[in-house]
Image (cartoon, rainbow, N blue to C red):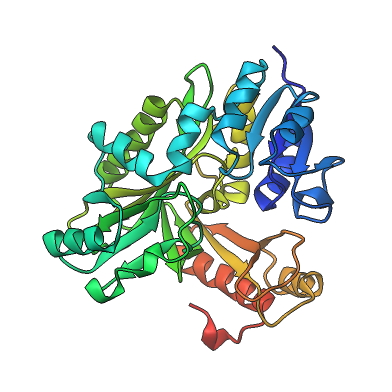
Length: 384
């Protein structure tokens, strides 16, 4: 079947950048958005405003789409399965997507596959959490099984006295996952694009920097990573994508210990913040390859255009007029590629990103940081 219209559920910046990637492919985008002015709704022509948790709203939206994909992983499983029952293509499908929706399901499945993960347990109350911490040693990490993102729903607990925190205001159906604290030296990410036919491509391994639970920087390829280590990580990601039968982009986030070994931290089954560098730094962006995969088109090459790429997220700061700031950045740093998301400026909110590519790692980092600092209204001394 020739896919002519891809329906995207969710109207954030990921959908906005998917729309941009759809234009040269000649594929039409239909959007089910949370509101009329959200990021992607500002640029997509075919917009339905509605609740993605309402089955009839989703089913009516899907009627005019050939396949459905996502800006986020929060569409309820019964609705996803209802789409399949109605003969609609869903990519990634519910059996795959559940591993990104529920951290307990993800941990249990990956562990059964022999994928390196932290020691974990599902705990019913603070007494079980204390017993877990006493058994493996404090501190421990506690996470909600569903709904957490950008550091929300995650706690680092230093002792039993904090064990009640994760259970306060816990929503029905949400469990608490307790994990060992990994004393990692850095965080890494690797993206896989995969078609329903099984064709797959992997992007270079990226080093990511998290600040207060939010991704703020990525450096690609990850510096000081041997070819052997990179190959092992890429093969691990490809294996996970195949075992879970993912269609589209799979992001595998990892923690690397001082000895070079890695454990899987999180999975995402959609374009991902750690792959934004690919818009300007790879031969085929993650957004284009996600759409190609969803439409079952041949995948594009994922290798980098330049030896180094640095991406810095622009978080809401002291400057409200991002368009004026962007013009100044383009004049001062002509090599900087600025992506703005059309969002109002709220402190700490992701409102855009900057990418710089080139031959010299220190140079592209410095240029990307300077451009992002200017957009955020920071002095040079405040940059990382």
